[in-house]
Amino acid sequence: FKVSLFTVKVGNTITLGDFEVEFIRVAHSIIDGASLAIKTPVGIIIHTGDFKLDQALDKDSITDINRIAHYGDKGVLALFSDSTNIEKEGFAISENDIKKTFRNIFSDHSGRIIVALFASNIHRISELLSLAVEFKKKVIFSGRSLITYTKVARKLGYLNIPEDILIDEETIDYYKPEELLVLTTGTQGEAMSALSRISVGDHKYIKIKPDDLVLLSSKFIPGNEKAISKIINNLYRRGAEVYYESISEIHVSGHAGKEELKLMMNIVKPKYFIPVHGELKHLYQHKKLAISSGIQPSNIFILENGNGLIFTDDEKCYASERVYAGRIFVDGKGIGDVGTHTLKERAHLSENGMIIVLLVVDAKTSSIISGPEIVSKGFVFEDYFKELNEKLHKLVVHVIEENQKYDSVDWIKVKEDVRKALKKYLNKTIDRHPFIFPMITEV
Image (cartoon, rainbow, N blue to C red):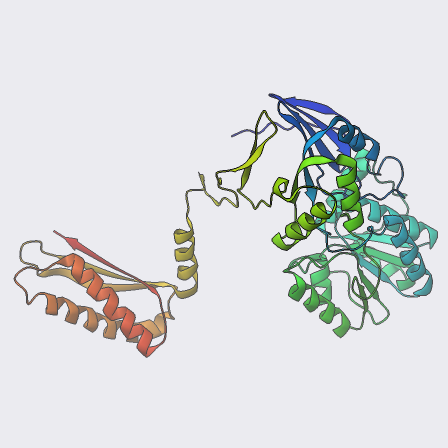
């Protein structure tokens, strides 16, 4: 299966069947962010994408409000708007403001500075590099994704790095701590990230020293708090000072605050409003803001992944049938052919192992030709299983003999009886729950 990729620049318009899609520049924490103005046969749809209205950035990075307003004046059928920071009052802090905070930190701290950040935040990396030049520091990039992103950004002209400022990790000991700025990844507590390895002393070159200052210049993404806290605690344990968002303004969001979201609605003036990109609580809070901004409650739709909307020629809108949306498991050459039940079985096998009971019987006389043979995989140590195997063997034989008392033996029933007997015995004696597979062959 081959996918064709096309490069689209901000300001370009492409045609997809009956749709014309214009890419409108928006400010965000990544470069080249774009919202979409989609011209359809039934009306114009605006999808903001991730955005904020940071007007303090350079002219090539700010959100193109004029272009968005152009469509608002023409009449917009529906607005799909980013909801991530709906709970943040006012406007998002400008990226330029955070540079002032960093400058103060660089000025006040006399030791080595380590900054962990998202590798995709090229604008912040650029600001930190300019501060490194200002304070005469050498810079180390640590982390594969950071090295990759900055390499691509330099190639495309988005990042200017003076050649004499970068040094390799292995030369770190040739410089005094106050001469160094380390930029690294791992802000979300990723187990194998550079920052995680630094925090436990497992990094080959970067070892925490008592005068080190570590800055986590990122937001704690919900669900990652425990992993991030573990890294912070490990850094403190090794003697570093640590700044993070909740105690110091060293990160600004790339998402619009409540007032910016309200301003977007007033500029676009949509008939229908669909809050997107956020948890359900964010979507409902955004709905309340839309109602307070004058949009009819009946014209606001809360959608979750898989929900659909249909817009008609007479500018009406209604919910459509749900479609499948979510992760698709790729297993070898199979795509999406492994269901939840199979995955649960695999998880069970990985945690508990399995026992296979092999038996060959005479189809006419119901007598045993071979077996029962009991094999275990991933269950218990082999030495211990030899002793356990004798007891399980006797138990299987007993179940078979009990069933052989009848005129005809139902071997399907025997399989289930063996499974139940072994399950009960293992649960009672060693509190283990392996998968049990009786395999009976009639010949």
